[in-house]
Each structure stands twice: as C-alpha cells, then as structure tokens.
Image (cartoon, rainbow over all chains, first blue to last red; front, side, top):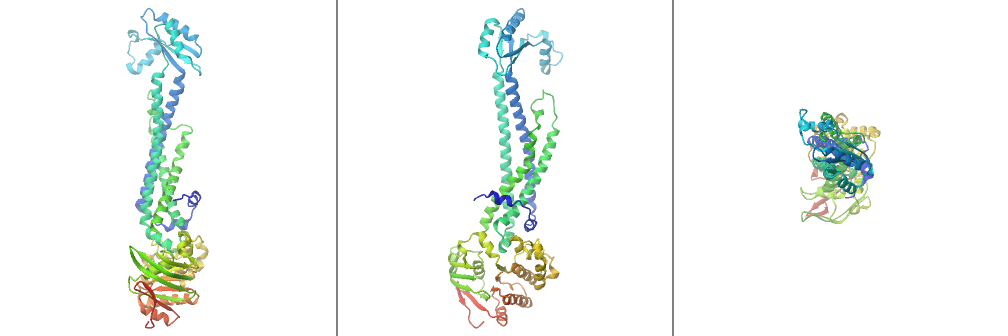
Length: 301
Length: 225
C-alpha cells in the first residue's frame, strides 16, 4: 500500500461533519487513550534514564579522563622521600598541570562514607596518594611509569583507565537501552492503536457501508477514523507526559554520593524530548490508523 | 445511462446471474421482479458499482465500471440515488443529517442546502420528524427518509431495492407516488420488487417496463402483469 503523506496530512484538517459520521465507540476510545497515557508515562522515564546515562558517560569520559593518581606504598620511613621524588618527576612531566599529595584529612573524608567518623586513620597502613591534573592533551603514561620506576620505585601510577572504561561502556549501553526502550514504546503504541483502530473499523462496517452507498471516497471515511484516533492518542499522551513529569519530580534529588539514581531528571534541552512525546504519539497513532483504515477499507470493498 | 452487456456474476463458485444485457434509457421507469433469492439485489449492486461483474461489461454514464478505481465509483455513485429495503442509516445522527449525508461526503456545505433540505423533507412528509433518530422512525418514515437521502444530490438515476418490503399498502402507494413524481421530473427509476400490486399501481400512472430475473437470466415480463 502506498503511503501518501500529503493525503494523510489533509486528514488532520478539521471537518465537523466528517467527525460526526463515526459514532463514539466505547472500549476502543478508552483503550487508545489509556495506551497512549501509559506509553507516554513510560517514555518520560525512558528519556530521563537515557539522558541521565548520557550525562554520567560524559562525566566519566571527560572529567575523569583528565585526572589520575599516583599511589606510594613504601615502608613508613621511606614514604616521605618517595613522595618527594614522585612529585619532582610529576611536576616536570609534560602534560601534567598539577600534582598534589592528598592530605590525611582528605583521606579521612574519602573513607568516611564507608567507615564512619570514628575511624582512626593514623592506625591504618594507608598509602600516600598524589592527585594529578592533566592538560587536555594528557601525558605519556608509559614514559611516566618508566621514570617513576627509576626515581620513585614505590610509586604506582593509576590513570583510571582500567575501571573508567567499563563504567563508560556501561553508561553508554544504558543510554542506548533507554533509546531502544523509547523505540519499543513507540512501536507498542502503534500496535495498540492499530488494534483499537481495527476493532473500531470492524465495529463500524455498517457505517462504512452507508458512507460508500452515498458516494464517500475511502479518504473521507479513513479521515474520520484517523482524526479521532490521533486526537485520542494526543490527549492520552499529554496526560501521561504530565503525570510522568510529576513522578520525576517526586524522585529525591540526593547528594553526589547517591549518584546516578538521584540524577534521573530532565535538564536543559532534555525538556524538548519530553515535550515531543504527545505530538509523536499523535503522529504514531495517525500513521497506524491510516494503515489500518486502508487495509480494512480494502477488505470491506 | 446504465448499460449491461452480457453480464454475469459468480459468487462462491456458483453463477448467480448470467448473460444479462440491458440498456436503461434516461427518463425511463423500470421494475425488476423475480422470486426471493433470484438475484435482484445483486443486479442492482452491479448497476451502481457496488459489485463488479465477473463477465461482461457494466457501463454507468458511459463509463465501464470495471476499469474504475473505488474513488471513481464513489464519485459516479453520487449521480445514482439508492434506496434499500433496510434503508441503511447512521443511527446516531438525526434524520436531517442522514438525509444531507451525500452532501457532506461530497465536500459540499450542508448549511447552504438547508432550504433544499427543508423542501425535501416536506416533500416526503417528514418535516415534523426532522430531528428524530432513525430507530425512532416507523417503517414508512424510514423509507421516505431513505428516498429523500437518495435524491438529495439530484441524481439522474434512482435505484430502489424492495422499497415497500417492510411497509403497509397505504405507505407503499405514497412512496410510489413520490417515485412517479421523480420520474415525471425526468429521473430514471429502477425498482426491484416482488410486489406485483405495486407494479400494477405504477402502470396505471406512468409508462413502465417490467423485467424479471428467472433462471439467472434477465427477461422482459409478460403482459399478465
């Protein structure tokens, strides 16, 4: 069947007389509105999930990519010397902006979430950590490792690549999963609207027969159904989107420690995606009903 | 106006109508008779393009129906008014909207035809029932409403399938009077009926030609009618 976009767009033109020829049908109307409502509600969360995953991937990919750590694991008496040597190496390495040893207070703050405030950090054999800030171009990690091995053998360079990449991969896949969910939601909406439109068209076979008897063209008959279903989907999706947004606001915005889950919200341009949900639902319903109508009208001919 | 040339129609492996040839001249009044199940309704449907002949040619206003798209047939159908025995209304719309339905589907503004609509409803005697819904109408009222709808677009041809099948004799005579009036206005009328009294009553008022479907074939009926 050929899909004529112009003819389909003309079907959206308001025609009160054409709209009245199809009797209001109970369950198909409710089914379409409810399906669109539920799918729009889910779409809000899928978009929020996808956008949040995207932000996490960006953060891990860009922010952490420009930082790394050197760990000094030396006997107690040698730690200070090894740290000094490592700092000298780091501060003369091209691509490193800054290198600062992490103080005991900072180490305590890092451990607090896991061990509480009563921990006696002094009693723990903690390694000395050096925080490195890189330039955008970064440094030659292989060359740095060789220099550290020569001048500060107790220093171990950790450029975060080992654990950062799997996390970025996971966040990227989560983002793709979110968009796949949105695609599935759109497909499911189309399927449900098609079922409802088929049922409505079959239930109105007598109406179609009367319209044909008095000289109605297929486009006229189809338009009466298409407009109705598109409007129902638009209405249901608008409500679903509003409720979805409200539900998003109910998710607490926690501290940085809470991380990803509390970041499940919409920011900036992300709202554009959310605002696109109702018109997209209407469009999906329009196309689905157009195809269903064409098929049923062919069968009834 | 309507021409059938060696037309046959088969359904479900069996031939219902065969070798039918007929020319319906403009302004003529035809009756089509035959026993129940003989194929009168099928014949009428072939005449207005609701069915496609399986053999032969049906020409409606000089156009072969076989080569036409569904939309072309729909446009041609606006020049043919059809009245069914069961009337076929949209039950959720009042009589006025049902009668003006042909205008709506052809994209004409029904509001501008309000005067015509009122005149039409007065002609068929349904002015007081204009806002009633089809299920609220009596059998006779339904038939008259169906006739009003059939002539709403001023068609050249009126096809009626057992229009008096569900109404009493007085109402049948009233409906016949309306059909005769239309014929005198120059409209072509083709009525399928098994009601011989109706045919006799019509012959007393207007020149008619009576056809009969017998053994799947179209015949000219005898003078016994």
